[in-house]
Each structure stands twice: as structure tokens, then as C-alpha cells.
Image 1 (cartoon, one colour):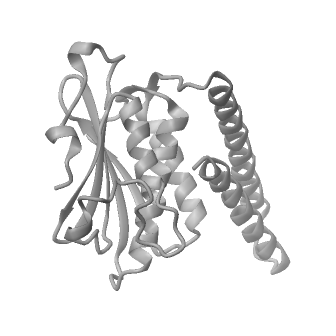
Image 2 (spheres, helix red, strand yellow):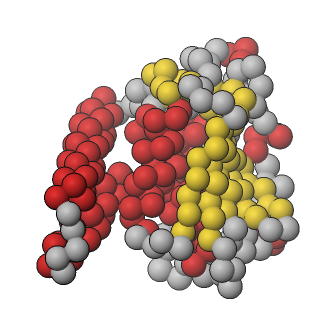
Length: 232
């Protein structure tokens, strides 16, 4: 939900500040390192403020605000937030675009919501597995002339085959304490932006894929990949 947008930069700020204080108390931090950490704290604070303003604006107008965005910056911001939130050096998140400078037409805050949900779900899934390798890779590439495809691939155990047909149903959750709104809401967000969200699984990885329009969608160019993103 919306709490993710605020939680991630705040957790990153807490992590940077705690690490800096610890190293200062131990006499291990140089002035250069302290200044670099403070710069990261300041950047995360600005990011939280920007998210707050964007979300307030969206709520006030009760609609999303799609614009032509550069994917590299938005995805890298989401990756940084997720990495800061998990505070686990064994989790590695990489962004691998087909090419740099690709654009999509969507609401930036809503895209961050979807990416954070998928990334944090992937982190939780990998922590619950026996796999020592905890890697997440975010891919971005052209799906076709009208659409961009983004994939979030992790090395977790994946979703059991019998549950893949219901993974996007409201209130579905693999966690006992979970409300199960994340994936259902994420799919609704992606569809509201003119794309589709679906799940696929290979022997050694689990992948959520979604599409976004390159430009403002028209009736003739609406996307419907693989029969509305049926789970493979």
C-alpha cells in the first residue's frame, strides 16, 4: 500500500544514520565517509518528500497522473529503496535494461508502488527458501512497438503451481499475517496505466512481468499480452 512509499526511504535513512553513528562511536569513520552518508540521508529525505507530494496530489485529484517518464531513474530509485529497506548484504538487487534511456507513459508514483511490492515480496520469498543465493534482477526491454516490459526475477522457491491461478485474487496471501492485497492492487495499478501484470516460473527462478505503454495509449493500441496476462 501507500505505506511502502514512505517506509522505504525512512528505513534507508535509519540504516544510513545508525551505521554512521556506530562507526563514529568506534572511531572508524573518516570525514569523507560521514559526509557521503549524510548526503545519502539528505537524498532519501528529499525522495520521501517528493513521494508525499505526489501521493497527496494523486489523492486530491482522485486519479493517476501519467506522464512520459525515464525508466532508468524510477527503477533505480525503487531498487535503492528496496535494498535500503531489507538491510541485508546477502540480498543483491540488480537493474539490467535492454538499453538505457527507455521511456514509458505512466504515473511515476504508481510504478514505484508496483516495483516495491514485487521487490519486497521477492526478498521475503528468498528469505524463506533454502537457497543461499539471494539475487533479484530487474529487466526492462521493448515488448513490442507500443509497450515496454519490466521483469522482476528472483532466485526464490517460486509460487506452487496449484496457487498460480489465484495469485492475483484479492486477499490471496502465502503469509499467515498477510492481507493479500499487494499483488491484486499491483495488477489493478498496472491495468489502470494501460498494461498487464502476470507471473511465470522457471526451474531456478520466479518472475513477475508487467507491461507499460511507451506513449499515451489509444483504443487501437491497448495491450493484452498472453490473454490478459494469464499465469503460466
